[in-house]
Amino acid sequence: MPKRFLLVNTDRAGLINENMTAAEHFVKLPYSHGAIRYNLEKYGWETAYVNLSIAKSFKKLAAAIDKFKPEIVYTYGALIALNPLICRRFFCKHKNFKVVHGWDDLYGELWRDVFGVIPGLFMRWFERQIIKRSDAVVTLSYYQQAKARKDWGVECKYIPNGADLPVFDRSAGSVRLEGKMNIVYTGDQAEWKRTADICEAMRHVPPEIKLYLTGRHYPYLDQYASDNCIFLGYLPKNDQLCVMDQADVLVCTANQDCNAKFHEYLVWEKPILGYDDRANLLFKNGRNALLTKDYPSAIMKLYHEPEFRKELVENAASDIRVFSWYEIAGLFDEYFCRLLAEDTISVKL
Image 1 (spheres, rainbow, N blue to C red):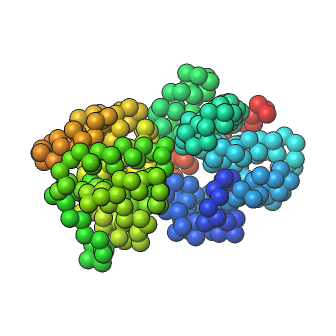
Image 2: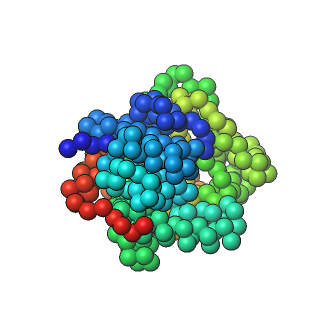
Image 3: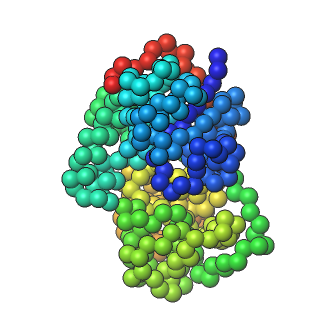
């Protein structure tokens, strides 16, 4: 049986286009759908990619589907998630495919936090349509899996984030961390990630404890810049990995149990500091991570108790398995093959 996988994505950054091979995609995005697509080819899948400019047009998307003839169409992002279903019903000649949605974020909450209450209410309704009408849904969040089951009667497949062991040259790193305890935050610092919480906390701890943040500059955080809250901005990949290597503590402030940082942090074998809410679905607080709503107190506990930091690391290593991206692709391969063995196509749309 042929195995063809078409990734339909809402990405607006323009880093990936439909002419890129899976290997080129992986170079640009060596995690998430870039890593999944690349590694699926190692399991015998033929893959292709459709970007937003094509996916937003029913005519263009249907033509891409008819040309590639996928067995799995994997939608990533909210705006175009229903389009392959509409194309299959009304526009495609090739109809023998299943639409699987990759559900990483709670779209209604995200739109509310970024765009306001009314857009958030619309997206909450639209999100429900995506989850209920897709042929299948894969989520990397225990919280979202439980929400779909309880609120919408949909059973989602749980497949976690992956992380590969970091490969870097420590001797070539150009950034040296200078604190007696160095806390590192990597990645997106948007307001909905609650990044300001950890920045504000640095005003209430001794100056020898330092927070370093890498990633895109957000002006709303400029007010927190200080001698112990240091924004490094975008760094070359090797420098970013060298910064993480020097960390005493890695922090993720988003109210999620599925943030990609968690699994990336775990492979470093560093203590993890996070927000005390949904992250409890992944961690056991005080055993394999420290989750809090009082960051200054939590930081001081970590500072004064190096043995506690060591215990967190040891327990996380024994409690939480981190799959490589190749292994994650294997879980997708297994799940997709099981879906394809079910000789039915959804008519929910």
